[in-house]
Length: 118
Image (cartoon, rainbow, N blue to C red; front, side, top):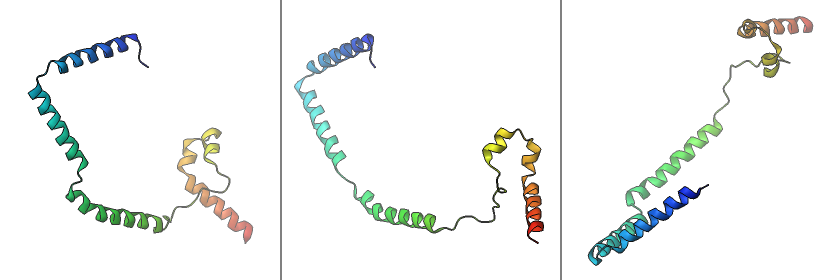
């Protein structure tokens, strides 16, 4: 939001700009007008070099998306033992040592499950 001092500064800047523009001679105004028209014409033109790379870029992006979609999920990562929730670990107050040995506890759990089955 603008406060009163910002409004006053904006009005003063606009007044000074208007005064400076009114003081310009016709030749300077003509030069500025031609420059403005050249800049607008240049901005409206599309360069052929840019158009040449558009199809190649589109094909590359499509190939990248295809590879990302068709890529299999990474394997080899064992899930946490059943019933272990991240929030339970964080809020439970267990020691960091237990978290460092999580694979060991998962192995013990797997052995116990194998003993129950066999």
